[in-house]
Length: 111
Image (tube, rainbow, N blue to C red; front, side, top):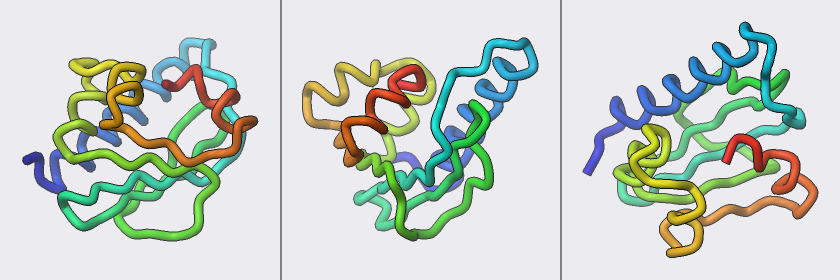
């Protein structure tokens, strides 16, 4: 099982990759949304703001969010590193996404 530090590092790495895309002039088109990433095996969650094609203000905690991802800590690390595809994780039930259809369609570039 991945620990909190590994999960936070995985999210920060994702944020850095999105920032690199933004600096290179090709940021993904994303809505401004609050994202919650639940990690039940660790008993914690991470919250971040999705805006301007990037992931900002990543903090451990919980609050109301428009988009919620639920997965294990190991799956979070695997998905963010590319070792596990988001579509495979979602299709197998390892990743659960709670979002409006509109939001889901708008963030698909990130997935």
